[in-house]
Image (tube, rainbow, N blue to C red; front, side):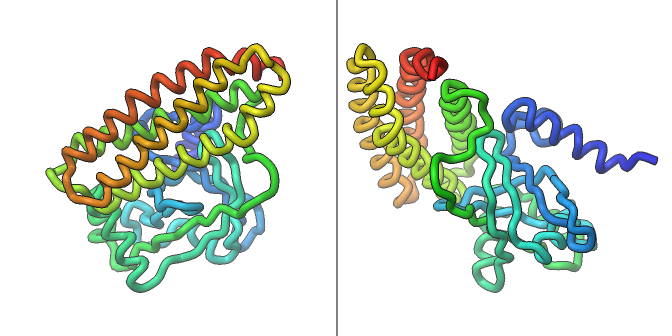
Length: 280
């Protein structure tokens, strides 16, 4: 006899992996990961689609809501027993350490979540259990990140598309804001800024020299891309400064400026460098 919940989850998992993190249905347009835990009793791996919240740095947050069920979800009981988990973002796959937040840290994180989406409060109101908030800390590993791509060219395109999707989400959240800059929205923007900085730094330090050594004819394009990195870094700093205040309109303006410049930059980089990377 089939399990409807397991069947539904498996359809989401298959779609997520086939489309590098993009899914339809109830998760469409949201922030979603695949979380693989080790069974608390069986010791076997279990993969579950889970919504997440950016939290800056090297961690994200997940909430064990189970839709307001009186019981914790299985994935939560698993990671309490076995805190090392695997996270799939659609682009990256990495190992992480799960840490259950407690006390004021948990309450602040949950309040941020509720501020950005009232649905979390609805789930809490449906149950007597305190909904756990779990931080998933990425475990650093040597070498380049594990990107779910078959070539370097595809890897760059997938990373770029992830930035595009996140900017789309942030702009949607800014457009639906109630005139104030919420704490979670601020964290979302700052996390995006840090991720973009890390990506451009990696390109400047590793990818651009790699390509320049093999394709001297690409020097003008690489020089232009380096200059654009500097310009985009300046826009990121202006956005960071806006985020230190409370003026939502100023943040919207800076995000729109960054979006326009970044879209043009990503398109040019894909046009110039992906053909070179596909032959590596």
